[in-house]
Image (cartoon, rainbow, N blue to C red; front, side, top):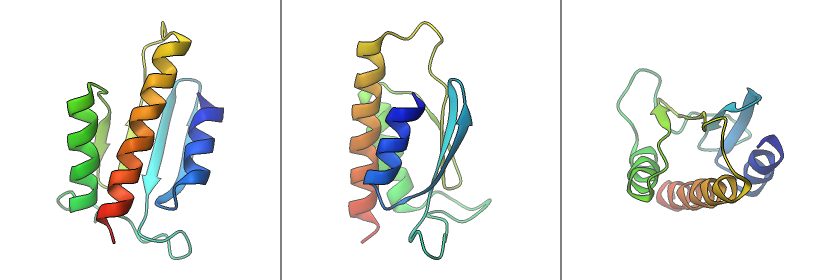
Length: 103
């Protein structure tokens, strides 16, 4: 999981930081990596790009916890490789949509 999420973080400029361990990870989304300005304000409503990512993930059936500018991922421990790849593909698409919307 870490390798797949690291690849996503490198591919998407809106990912400011990836942190986690085992099967629990957080993607922190930013407007720019250089400034690390959060994509959504702390304790504020979700920004349009964060709402777009959440809408897509919910419609795809990938249930993550989205709060502030963070996407929390904690898949089941009985996850198959195929399910992992499907989830990563959905996260990839959600990050693409959020990145396009922030422009």
